[in-house]
Image 1 (cartoon, protein in one colour):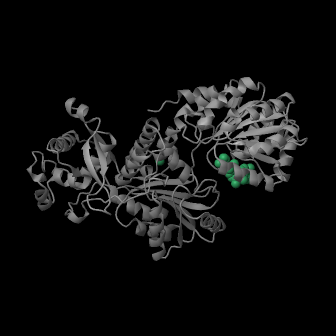
Image 2 (image 1 turned 45 degrees about the horizontal axis):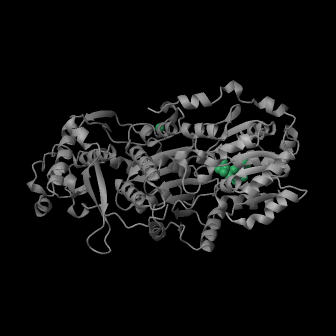
Image 3 (image 1 turned 135 degrees about the vertical axis):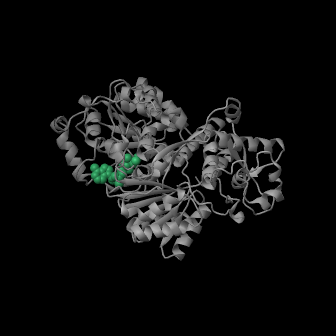
Length: 609
Ligand code: ADP
Ligand code: MG
Ligand code: ZN
């Protein structure tokens, strides 16, 4: 069970959060409202924006936790243009990515705000820095990478100069979760260096902003920046208007998607995420062939094409984008009615970021994920092959993938609760009110004791491994149940001691048993290049890291299942419900189709994510 204690300790009691009345009584309030309307041309504040702005204008440190798209930028951009604050001068914004900085600076300049950016590692920025030292009119905001801020001696001198003249308004740490050592990657190493700022520039307030509210991330922000008395502005990450559904991936996903769109959201805006670039092109084409006007988008496209597609989508000219995760950074569209994951996302965090782009207007929006273990495995081998990250980072990614895989396989617990617990937020499933597939399911939960079947399955794999034979997942289910006899005989699997000993459970349940054995790391899988050129790699089943313990300690294997068919309540989602129901244990014994036995894993480009 997740621990909430760390967050509870960090989160202020409601009494400490500044009240609406006290914010409006602040001497800064009139100027703040004036800037909101006249500079940013917005009408009202979103939740916590005003509190963040007033807090920093009062010279207090603040941590702002807000979901992606919540409006974090305004929390520091607006105080940066206020002159009445306790500290005025230049607001230093630490940001990890050049592209994000450039977008923001451009947007600010469009609002006639003086913003500057220093991002190059060499001395190209010399003129800007010189200007920062000498010019009478300082910019309101200076965007800078952490490396430049902490490693450049010239930059330090410039900052010292500003500081001594009381022209250093505040330090803003955007995407502050990158401070966290676990969240750090090659782009954000510099965030660790931020720990020196408090002692070097005492009295300069911090604003740290992030959409990742895990307790580890929070704790690292607090200790690295040296915050003690700070205002924590957090809000629930629950998105009540989003509906979550996970559907086992069967053949012809595109037709399911077409049915879903035409049956529920014809002519509405949506995003379909795929792992592989080639897949985005293929899926978009298949959708077009079935009358859905979809376009693809991925990182390898010419930047002109990317810009054009993004504009067409933004304007509503093109409604449906089939994209890799390259699509979305900085995308802001209110009326996205559905986000479909064609494959398993890389983590719960990624799933939330991506589904979070749906329903920003507050209206009901649908999040559908097509789950197949093949996709999890494809991601796993992407991680294994990645040359840009070290072993520690690989392990972190693997763990995140296991977590999201287990999330997909869970057909019992409230998805909202699982997601929010991941972000250390408590959530009572009763409040979900059937807005996720598991809560909407009418099927009774029963716990099956599958210890006997699981033991047979694991011993069968052990037996094969001892004989130096290997087997694919689908074939292992056939061997376990003793079906597809001629194929088994041809491959010599029927000679095994454990062959066919699992015939007492249905094919669907056996398949599920295998998925859960893998998810619990009692079994594992590995992808191997096909022997024949141009053929997709093949996935084989092996003993997992927990197999020994499972067999030698005679551990029991319990599996919670829905005893009757799943049915999603709201008629609006009929199509989805019909698809979801195929995931239940089938009482029918279908004749296995041999040609469908090997789930081909398609080639992919490891650089896509
Ligand atoms: P975040 O950094 O939290 O992901 P942004 O700061 O980029 O989010 O804001 C997301 C979008 O919300 C932007 O288009 C921004 O203009 C808009 N926005 C922010 N605050 C407000 C507000 N008070 N009223 C209307 N729109 C807002
Ligand atoms: Mg942001
Ligand atoms: Zn639920």
